[in-house]
Length: 318
Ligand code: F6P
Image 1: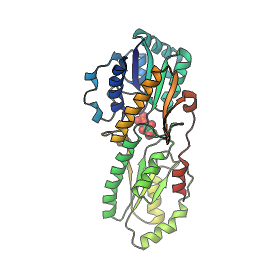
Image 2: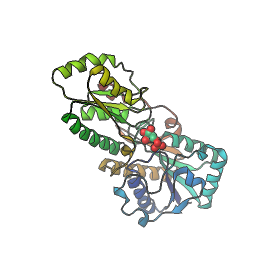
Image 3: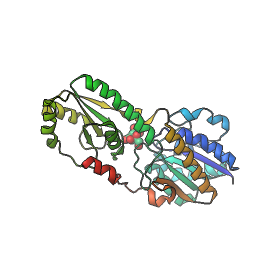
């Protein structure tokens, strides 16, 4: 009963590969035998499970994505497939699971644990930063830096023309990426799902600014707002009176060379996860806040909507 496995589920993030690498190294250091489960819960169902070696993880620390693959598994939502998954784990004598994923992945895991009692530890991993109970999710820093770099480039071209640029960020229903990117890139407008807005209130001010020589606007829009991003660009053209362009950043936000911060967080998350499993923790998620790392039970984390940091929200409203 020294076998431990890792899988990635849901949207990949930059930071998964550094975490997977350290998982192999730290497991071996602790006298455990590490296994990879490929393609998330899909691989668990299809018995795509293999013992992992140092050679498997050589050189992956610099890469975004995840070497062991990820998936959004629909089958894992069905009881009969979870039963098959449990049988596959038994075949390999695996009774400890480290899962890198987001809220949806944790909800599936919670049910799996309640049905089959497989010990697990979750590592919050999503660029959306929308997991309840933790202030940080693996991959957020790299995503923010990808967005920052994109925004800085867009500013170059925006400043050369008289134009408004409306840039859509990911985040699902959470405005975190958009809001932090707004505060750190100095954009003029930020629209997120958490804060109701009325564009009419900006018209006079923006027109006045144009009149006084402003050449361009940057507007950051989170994908979760009710309006389509193109409508915001149309509003700039029709109401403010400036030509507008839309950039949907899309999946570039999920990839790229992991930042030092995400590499370090991946390392630490994995250390805490393996230690927790060795200590006998049954169903925990490693959370991170101002006081550092702490363990929460899956019930405190999964399926609960996370509120956006009130301090950040206040900056937007002010
Ligand atoms: O959860 C991460 C995320 O990138 C969201 O920001 C986005 O809404 C979604 O995944 C996109 O999912 P997919 O890659 O399946 O299209």
